[in-house]
Length: 470
Image: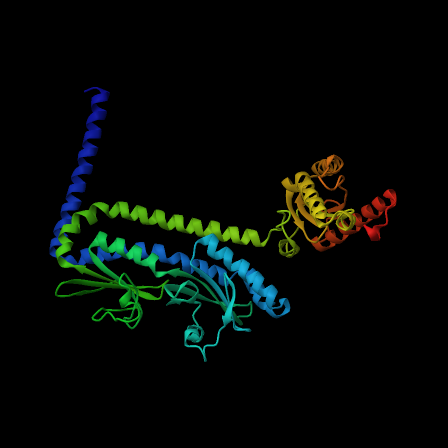
Protein backbone atom coordinates (compact mmCIF):
# COMPACT_ATOMS: atom_id res chain seq x y z
CA UNK A 1 0.00 0.00 0.00
CA UNK A 2 1.52 3.33 -1.08
CA UNK A 3 1.86 6.40 1.11
CA UNK A 4 -1.12 8.17 -0.45
CA UNK A 5 -3.46 5.28 0.27
CA UNK A 6 -2.16 5.02 3.86
CA UNK A 7 -2.95 8.72 4.35
CA UNK A 8 -6.46 8.29 2.94
CA UNK A 9 -7.06 5.28 5.16
CA UNK A 10 -5.84 7.14 8.24
CA UNK A 11 -8.08 10.10 7.45
CA UNK A 12 -11.03 7.78 6.89
CA UNK A 13 -10.42 6.03 10.22
CA UNK A 14 -10.18 9.39 12.04
CA UNK A 15 -13.36 10.65 10.37
CA UNK A 16 -15.23 7.42 11.06
CA UNK A 17 -14.04 7.44 14.67
CA UNK A 18 -15.21 11.03 15.08
CA UNK A 19 -18.62 10.31 13.55
CA UNK A 20 -19.00 7.16 15.62
CA UNK A 21 -18.02 8.90 18.86
CA UNK A 22 -20.36 11.78 18.04
CA UNK A 23 -23.22 9.37 17.34
CA UNK A 24 -22.54 7.43 20.57
CA UNK A 25 -22.38 10.67 22.55
CA UNK A 26 -25.63 11.98 21.11
CA UNK A 27 -27.36 8.65 21.56
CA UNK A 28 -26.14 8.38 25.14
CA UNK A 29 -27.36 11.87 25.85
CA UNK A 30 -30.67 10.98 24.24
CA UNK A 31 -31.07 7.94 26.47
CA UNK A 32 -30.07 10.01 29.49
CA UNK A 33 -32.71 12.57 28.55
CA UNK A 34 -35.29 9.84 28.27
CA UNK A 35 -34.44 8.62 31.76
CA UNK A 36 -34.25 12.04 33.35
CA UNK A 37 -35.88 15.16 32.00
CA UNK A 38 -34.58 16.94 35.05
CA UNK A 39 -31.05 17.12 33.61
CA UNK A 40 -32.41 18.45 30.32
CA UNK A 41 -34.40 21.14 32.11
CA UNK A 42 -31.27 22.20 34.00
CA UNK A 43 -29.29 22.25 30.77
CA UNK A 44 -31.80 24.52 29.07
CA UNK A 45 -31.96 26.78 32.13
CA UNK A 46 -28.18 27.03 32.15
CA UNK A 47 -28.15 28.21 28.53
CA UNK A 48 -30.79 30.81 29.33
CA UNK A 49 -28.90 31.89 32.47
CA UNK A 50 -25.64 32.40 30.56
CA UNK A 51 -27.34 34.47 27.88
CA UNK A 52 -29.25 36.70 30.32
CA UNK A 53 -26.24 37.30 32.58
CA UNK A 54 -24.14 38.16 29.56
CA UNK A 55 -26.68 40.75 28.40
CA UNK A 56 -27.63 42.32 31.74
CA UNK A 57 -24.20 42.48 33.42
CA UNK A 58 -22.94 45.41 31.32
CA UNK A 59 -25.08 48.08 33.06
CA UNK A 60 -23.78 46.83 36.41
CA UNK A 61 -20.17 47.19 35.24
CA UNK A 62 -20.85 50.69 33.87
CA UNK A 63 -22.63 51.83 37.07
CA UNK A 64 -19.78 50.53 39.25
CA UNK A 65 -17.21 52.18 36.98
CA UNK A 66 -19.02 55.51 37.43
CA UNK A 67 -19.05 55.06 41.22
CA UNK A 68 -15.26 54.70 41.26
CA UNK A 69 -14.55 57.44 38.70
CA UNK A 70 -12.20 59.96 40.37
CA UNK A 71 -13.62 62.71 38.16
CA UNK A 72 -17.16 62.16 39.51
CA UNK A 73 -15.90 61.81 43.10
CA UNK A 74 -14.05 65.13 42.84
CA UNK A 75 -17.17 66.80 41.43
CA UNK A 76 -19.23 65.74 44.44
CA UNK A 77 -16.49 66.64 46.92
CA UNK A 78 -16.27 70.15 45.43
CA UNK A 79 -19.98 70.62 44.75
CA UNK A 80 -20.40 73.55 47.16
CA UNK A 81 -17.25 75.31 45.99
CA UNK A 82 -18.28 75.05 42.33
CA UNK A 83 -21.68 76.65 42.84
CA UNK A 84 -24.94 75.22 41.55
CA UNK A 85 -24.70 76.44 37.93
CA UNK A 86 -21.17 75.10 37.43
CA UNK A 87 -21.95 71.82 39.24
CA UNK A 88 -25.07 71.29 37.10
CA UNK A 89 -23.17 72.09 33.90
CA UNK A 90 -20.36 69.62 34.65
CA UNK A 91 -22.72 66.90 35.85
CA UNK A 92 -24.93 67.27 32.78
CA UNK A 93 -21.96 67.00 30.42
CA UNK A 94 -20.64 63.94 32.26
CA UNK A 95 -24.00 62.13 32.36
CA UNK A 96 -24.85 63.02 28.76
CA UNK A 97 -21.55 61.42 27.75
CA UNK A 98 -22.49 58.23 29.61
CA UNK A 99 -26.02 58.12 28.19
CA UNK A 100 -25.22 58.97 24.58
CA UNK A 101 -21.81 57.34 24.43
CA UNK A 102 -22.93 54.00 25.87
CA UNK A 103 -26.51 54.00 24.62
CA UNK A 104 -28.49 53.97 27.87
CA UNK A 105 -31.92 55.48 28.40
CA UNK A 106 -30.94 57.15 31.68
CA UNK A 107 -27.83 58.24 33.58
CA UNK A 108 -28.04 59.97 36.94
CA UNK A 109 -26.22 61.13 40.08
CA UNK A 110 -27.74 62.00 43.46
CA UNK A 111 -25.60 64.13 45.80
CA UNK A 112 -26.00 63.03 49.40
CA UNK A 113 -24.81 66.41 50.65
CA UNK A 114 -27.23 68.61 48.68
CA UNK A 115 -29.92 66.09 47.75
CA UNK A 116 -29.70 67.23 44.13
CA UNK A 117 -30.77 64.72 41.49
CA UNK A 118 -28.63 65.32 38.39
CA UNK A 119 -29.49 63.72 35.05
CA UNK A 120 -28.30 63.99 31.48
CA UNK A 121 -30.77 66.89 31.17
CA UNK A 122 -29.25 68.84 34.06
CA UNK A 123 -30.72 69.45 37.51
CA UNK A 124 -33.93 67.49 37.94
CA UNK A 125 -35.06 67.94 41.56
CA UNK A 126 -34.13 67.68 45.23
CA UNK A 127 -34.49 64.11 46.51
CA UNK A 128 -36.65 63.99 49.67
CA UNK A 129 -37.30 60.36 50.66
CA UNK A 130 -39.32 61.39 53.72
CA UNK A 131 -41.68 63.60 51.73
CA UNK A 132 -41.93 62.13 48.23
CA UNK A 133 -42.88 58.46 47.87
CA UNK A 134 -41.06 58.32 44.54
CA UNK A 135 -37.80 59.09 46.33
CA UNK A 136 -38.02 56.27 48.87
CA UNK A 137 -35.79 54.14 46.68
CA UNK A 138 -32.86 56.34 47.76
CA UNK A 139 -33.35 55.73 51.47
CA UNK A 140 -34.07 52.02 50.87
CA UNK A 141 -30.88 51.60 48.89
CA UNK A 142 -28.70 53.38 51.48
CA UNK A 143 -30.26 51.35 54.28
CA UNK A 144 -29.25 48.08 52.57
CA UNK A 145 -25.61 49.30 52.55
CA UNK A 146 -24.80 47.40 49.37
CA UNK A 147 -22.24 48.61 46.80
CA UNK A 148 -24.89 48.40 44.08
CA UNK A 149 -28.46 47.24 43.57
CA UNK A 150 -31.02 46.88 40.79
CA UNK A 151 -34.33 48.65 41.11
CA UNK A 152 -37.34 48.46 38.81
CA UNK A 153 -39.23 51.74 38.66
CA UNK A 154 -40.90 54.19 36.32
CA UNK A 155 -38.53 56.63 34.63
CA UNK A 156 -39.92 60.12 35.29
CA UNK A 157 -37.80 61.54 32.46
CA UNK A 158 -39.16 59.04 29.88
CA UNK A 159 -42.92 59.25 30.38
CA UNK A 160 -42.81 56.80 33.29
CA UNK A 161 -41.53 53.93 31.14
CA UNK A 162 -40.69 50.77 33.12
CA UNK A 163 -36.93 50.89 33.67
CA UNK A 164 -34.29 48.77 35.37
CA UNK A 165 -32.06 51.19 37.31
CA UNK A 166 -28.60 50.05 38.47
CA UNK A 167 -27.81 52.11 41.59
CA UNK A 168 -24.24 52.30 42.95
CA UNK A 169 -22.83 53.94 46.11
CA UNK A 170 -20.25 56.69 45.63
CA UNK A 171 -17.74 56.95 48.46
CA UNK A 172 -14.58 58.97 49.00
CA UNK A 173 -11.21 57.47 49.90
CA UNK A 174 -12.18 57.26 53.57
CA UNK A 175 -15.45 55.45 52.87
CA UNK A 176 -17.68 58.49 53.44
CA UNK A 177 -20.91 58.41 51.40
CA UNK A 178 -20.97 61.06 48.68
CA UNK A 179 -24.09 59.96 46.82
CA UNK A 180 -25.57 57.45 44.42
CA UNK A 181 -25.08 57.11 40.67
CA UNK A 182 -26.19 54.73 37.98
CA UNK A 183 -27.74 54.05 34.60
CA UNK A 184 -31.19 52.94 33.49
CA UNK A 185 -32.26 50.42 30.84
CA UNK A 186 -35.83 50.47 29.64
CA UNK A 187 -37.69 47.24 30.24
CA UNK A 188 -38.44 46.82 26.55
CA UNK A 189 -34.84 45.77 25.88
CA UNK A 190 -34.96 42.99 28.49
CA UNK A 191 -38.43 41.98 27.32
CA UNK A 192 -37.20 41.62 23.76
CA UNK A 193 -34.38 39.37 24.93
CA UNK A 194 -36.77 37.31 27.07
CA UNK A 195 -39.24 36.92 24.19
CA UNK A 196 -36.49 35.59 21.93
CA UNK A 197 -35.35 33.08 24.56
CA UNK A 198 -38.91 32.01 25.39
CA UNK A 199 -39.57 31.32 21.73
CA UNK A 200 -36.27 29.46 21.27
CA UNK A 201 -36.65 27.25 24.35
CA UNK A 202 -40.47 27.06 24.59
CA UNK A 203 -40.22 28.30 28.17
CA UNK A 204 -41.55 31.06 30.41
CA UNK A 205 -38.78 33.28 31.83
CA UNK A 206 -38.91 35.78 34.71
CA UNK A 207 -36.57 37.57 37.07
CA UNK A 208 -37.92 37.80 40.63
CA UNK A 209 -36.69 39.20 43.94
CA UNK A 210 -36.13 37.26 47.18
CA UNK A 211 -39.88 37.39 47.91
CA UNK A 212 -40.81 36.00 44.51
CA UNK A 213 -42.10 39.39 43.28
CA UNK A 214 -41.70 39.66 39.51
CA UNK A 215 -39.12 42.30 38.46
CA UNK A 216 -38.61 41.55 34.76
CA UNK A 217 -41.14 39.74 32.61
CA UNK A 218 -42.48 39.81 29.06
CA UNK A 219 -45.92 40.62 30.48
CA UNK A 220 -45.81 44.14 31.94
CA UNK A 221 -48.96 43.51 34.01
CA UNK A 222 -46.99 41.05 36.14
CA UNK A 223 -44.10 43.43 36.96
CA UNK A 224 -44.08 44.24 40.69
CA UNK A 225 -47.67 43.04 41.01
CA UNK A 226 -47.47 39.22 40.87
CA UNK A 227 -45.42 36.73 42.84
CA UNK A 228 -44.17 33.44 41.46
CA UNK A 229 -45.30 30.78 43.93
CA UNK A 230 -43.94 27.30 44.45
CA UNK A 231 -40.49 28.20 43.15
CA UNK A 232 -37.47 27.03 45.17
CA UNK A 233 -35.36 30.16 45.76
CA UNK A 234 -31.89 29.70 47.23
CA UNK A 235 -29.03 32.24 47.31
CA UNK A 236 -26.48 29.41 47.29
CA UNK A 237 -25.81 29.86 43.57
CA UNK A 238 -26.87 26.36 42.51
CA UNK A 239 -29.74 25.48 40.20
CA UNK A 240 -32.94 24.62 42.09
CA UNK A 241 -35.35 22.20 40.46
CA UNK A 242 -38.98 21.34 41.05
CA UNK A 243 -41.28 19.19 38.94
CA UNK A 244 -44.84 20.42 38.43
CA UNK A 245 -47.92 18.87 36.91
CA UNK A 246 -47.37 20.59 33.56
CA UNK A 247 -43.62 20.77 33.43
CA UNK A 248 -40.52 21.78 35.36
CA UNK A 249 -39.48 24.85 37.34
CA UNK A 250 -35.81 25.74 37.50
CA UNK A 251 -34.39 28.72 39.42
CA UNK A 252 -30.97 30.16 40.15
CA UNK A 253 -29.72 33.18 42.05
CA UNK A 254 -28.03 35.74 39.76
CA UNK A 255 -25.40 37.24 42.04
CA UNK A 256 -24.55 40.23 39.83
CA UNK A 257 -28.20 41.23 39.61
CA UNK A 258 -29.36 40.27 43.10
CA UNK A 259 -32.44 38.57 41.59
CA UNK A 260 -33.50 35.01 40.83
CA UNK A 261 -33.90 33.62 37.34
CA UNK A 262 -37.03 31.47 37.11
CA UNK A 263 -37.54 29.26 34.06
CA UNK A 264 -40.75 27.28 33.60
CA UNK A 265 -40.40 24.58 30.94
CA UNK A 266 -43.31 22.74 29.38
CA UNK A 267 -42.83 18.94 29.52
CA UNK A 268 -44.38 18.46 26.10
CA UNK A 269 -41.77 20.61 24.43
CA UNK A 270 -38.74 19.01 26.04
CA UNK A 271 -38.55 15.96 23.82
CA UNK A 272 -39.05 17.94 20.62
CA UNK A 273 -36.37 20.41 21.61
CA UNK A 274 -33.87 17.83 22.84
CA UNK A 275 -31.89 17.21 19.68
CA UNK A 276 -31.81 20.92 18.85
CA UNK A 277 -30.44 21.68 22.30
CA UNK A 278 -27.71 19.07 21.96
CA UNK A 279 -26.72 20.09 18.44
CA UNK A 280 -26.70 23.76 19.32
CA UNK A 281 -24.96 23.25 22.66
CA UNK A 282 -21.43 23.73 21.39
CA UNK A 283 -22.43 26.54 19.06
CA UNK A 284 -24.33 28.39 21.76
CA UNK A 285 -21.43 28.00 24.16
CA UNK A 286 -19.03 29.56 21.65
CA UNK A 287 -21.55 32.30 20.80
CA UNK A 288 -22.17 33.21 24.43
CA UNK A 289 -18.42 33.33 25.12
CA UNK A 290 -17.97 35.51 22.06
CA UNK A 291 -20.76 37.85 23.15
CA UNK A 292 -19.35 38.11 26.66
CA UNK A 293 -15.87 38.78 25.32
CA UNK A 294 -17.24 41.39 22.93
CA UNK A 295 -19.26 43.02 25.72
CA UNK A 296 -16.21 43.20 27.98
CA UNK A 297 -14.13 44.69 25.17
CA UNK A 298 -16.82 47.25 24.33
CA UNK A 299 -17.11 48.24 28.00
CA UNK A 300 -13.33 48.47 28.30
CA UNK A 301 -13.06 50.61 25.15
CA UNK A 302 -15.93 52.90 26.20
CA UNK A 303 -14.63 53.23 29.75
CA UNK A 304 -11.15 53.98 28.43
CA UNK A 305 -12.67 56.60 26.10
CA UNK A 306 -14.41 58.31 29.03
CA UNK A 307 -11.23 58.23 31.11
CA UNK A 308 -9.23 59.48 28.11
CA UNK A 309 -11.60 62.44 27.62
CA UNK A 310 -11.35 63.47 31.28
CA UNK A 311 -7.55 63.74 30.98
CA UNK A 312 -7.44 65.72 27.72
CA UNK A 313 -7.46 69.45 27.04
CA UNK A 314 -10.32 70.05 24.61
CA UNK A 315 -8.73 73.02 22.86
CA UNK A 316 -5.41 71.33 21.96
CA UNK A 317 -5.87 67.59 22.39
CA UNK A 318 -2.88 67.48 24.74
CA UNK A 319 -3.11 66.11 28.26
CA UNK A 320 -4.65 68.56 30.76
CA UNK A 321 -3.63 69.89 34.18
CA UNK A 322 -5.33 67.00 35.97
CA UNK A 323 -3.32 64.47 33.97
CA UNK A 324 -0.16 66.48 34.64
CA UNK A 325 -0.62 66.40 38.41
CA UNK A 326 -1.38 62.65 38.45
CA UNK A 327 1.62 61.83 36.25
CA UNK A 328 3.84 64.03 38.39
CA UNK A 329 2.64 62.32 41.56
CA UNK A 330 3.23 58.90 40.01
CA UNK A 331 6.79 59.75 38.94
CA UNK A 332 7.57 61.39 42.26
CA UNK A 333 7.30 58.00 43.97
CA UNK A 334 9.63 56.26 41.51
CA UNK A 335 13.24 56.46 40.37
CA UNK A 336 13.47 58.54 37.22
CA UNK A 337 15.15 56.90 34.21
CA UNK A 338 18.47 58.25 32.97
CA UNK A 339 16.94 59.65 29.78
CA UNK A 340 14.07 61.47 31.51
CA UNK A 341 13.52 65.12 30.48
CA UNK A 342 11.16 67.67 32.05
CA UNK A 343 10.12 70.33 29.52
CA UNK A 344 8.56 73.72 30.38
CA UNK A 345 7.18 75.99 27.65
CA UNK A 346 5.26 79.26 27.50
CA UNK A 347 3.77 81.18 24.56
CA UNK A 348 5.16 84.67 24.00
CA UNK A 349 2.70 87.39 23.07
CA UNK A 350 -0.56 85.59 23.81
CA UNK A 351 -1.97 88.54 25.78
CA UNK A 352 -1.18 90.90 22.91
CA UNK A 353 -2.96 88.62 20.44
CA UNK A 354 -6.01 88.40 22.69
CA UNK A 355 -6.12 92.16 23.36
CA UNK A 356 -5.51 93.39 19.83
CA UNK A 357 -6.91 90.66 17.59
CA UNK A 358 -9.43 88.91 19.86
CA UNK A 359 -9.60 85.57 21.58
CA UNK A 360 -10.06 83.76 18.27
CA UNK A 361 -6.54 84.84 17.40
CA UNK A 362 -5.35 83.79 20.85
CA UNK A 363 -6.90 80.36 20.34
CA UNK A 364 -5.14 80.10 16.98
CA UNK A 365 -1.84 80.86 18.69
CA UNK A 366 -2.49 78.24 21.39
CA UNK A 367 -3.29 75.59 18.77
CA UNK A 368 -0.21 76.52 16.79
CA UNK A 369 2.00 76.23 19.85
CA UNK A 370 0.52 72.88 20.86
CA UNK A 371 0.96 71.49 17.33
CA UNK A 372 4.58 72.66 17.15
CA UNK A 373 5.40 71.19 20.56
CA UNK A 374 3.65 67.95 19.69
CA UNK A 375 5.44 67.63 16.34
CA UNK A 376 8.83 68.21 17.98
CA UNK A 377 8.47 66.36 21.29
CA UNK A 378 5.28 64.27 21.03
CA UNK A 379 6.98 61.02 19.92
CA UNK A 380 9.07 60.96 23.10
CA UNK A 381 6.47 61.16 25.86
CA UNK A 382 3.51 63.10 27.22
CA UNK A 383 2.78 66.78 26.62
CA UNK A 384 0.43 68.77 28.86
CA UNK A 385 -1.35 72.10 28.66
CA UNK A 386 -1.26 73.22 32.29
CA UNK A 387 -2.49 76.80 31.91
CA UNK A 388 -3.67 79.37 29.38
CA UNK A 389 -0.29 79.73 27.67
CA UNK A 390 1.71 77.22 29.73
CA UNK A 391 2.80 73.77 28.59
CA UNK A 392 4.87 70.99 30.12
CA UNK A 393 6.36 67.74 28.93
CA UNK A 394 7.53 64.56 30.62
CA UNK A 395 9.73 62.86 28.08
CA UNK A 396 12.12 59.96 27.52
CA UNK A 397 14.80 60.91 25.02
CA UNK A 398 18.59 60.64 24.65
CA UNK A 399 20.68 63.81 24.42
CA UNK A 400 21.04 63.77 20.62
CA UNK A 401 17.27 63.41 20.19
CA UNK A 402 16.72 66.29 22.63
CA UNK A 403 18.96 68.61 20.66
CA UNK A 404 17.27 67.59 17.41
CA UNK A 405 13.80 68.16 18.88
CA UNK A 406 14.78 71.66 20.07
CA UNK A 407 16.06 72.54 16.59
CA UNK A 408 12.86 71.17 15.06
CA UNK A 409 10.77 73.30 17.43
CA UNK A 410 12.74 76.43 16.51
CA UNK A 411 12.24 75.67 12.80
CA UNK A 412 8.53 75.03 13.27
CA UNK A 413 8.11 78.34 15.12
CA UNK A 414 10.02 80.18 12.38
CA UNK A 415 7.92 78.62 9.61
CA UNK A 416 4.56 79.01 11.33
CA UNK A 417 2.06 81.57 10.06
CA UNK A 418 -1.61 81.65 11.05
CA UNK A 419 -4.59 83.33 9.47
CA UNK A 420 -4.89 86.01 12.17
CA UNK A 421 -1.50 85.82 13.88
CA UNK A 422 1.54 85.83 11.63
CA UNK A 423 4.26 84.65 13.97
CA UNK A 424 4.69 82.12 16.77
CA UNK A 425 7.20 82.39 19.61
CA UNK A 426 7.60 79.91 22.45
CA UNK A 427 10.01 80.26 25.36
CA UNK A 428 11.08 76.91 26.71
CA UNK A 429 13.49 75.25 29.05
CA UNK A 430 14.28 71.74 30.15
CA UNK A 431 16.04 69.74 32.84
CA UNK A 432 17.13 66.13 32.49
CA UNK A 433 17.99 63.30 34.84
CA UNK A 434 21.23 62.95 32.94
CA UNK A 435 22.22 66.48 33.99
CA UNK A 436 20.72 66.27 37.51
CA UNK A 437 20.74 62.56 38.46
CA UNK A 438 19.89 63.11 42.13
CA UNK A 439 16.92 65.45 41.62
CA UNK A 440 13.25 64.45 41.90
CA UNK A 441 10.55 65.20 39.34
CA UNK A 442 9.50 68.26 41.36
CA UNK A 443 13.03 69.65 41.49
CA UNK A 444 13.54 69.03 37.77
CA UNK A 445 10.31 70.94 37.15
CA UNK A 446 11.61 73.91 39.16
CA UNK A 447 14.89 73.96 37.22
CA UNK A 448 13.05 73.62 33.92
CA UNK A 449 10.73 76.52 34.83
CA UNK A 450 13.66 78.73 35.81
CA UNK A 451 15.37 78.08 32.48
CA UNK A 452 12.13 78.76 30.60
CA UNK A 453 11.68 82.09 32.40
CA UNK A 454 15.26 83.07 31.57
CA UNK A 455 14.53 82.27 27.92
CA UNK A 456 11.37 84.40 28.13
CA UNK A 457 13.27 87.32 29.66
CA UNK A 458 15.85 87.05 26.89
CA UNK A 459 13.08 87.06 24.27
CA UNK A 460 11.47 90.23 25.61
CA UNK A 461 14.84 91.91 26.11
CA UNK A 462 15.89 91.09 22.54
CA UNK A 463 12.53 91.97 20.98
CA UNK A 464 12.22 95.19 22.97
CA UNK A 465 8.67 94.40 24.02
CA UNK A 466 7.22 95.04 27.47
CA UNK A 467 6.65 91.62 29.06
CA UNK A 468 3.93 92.93 31.37
CA UNK A 469 1.86 93.93 28.35
CA UNK A 470 2.45 90.77 26.39
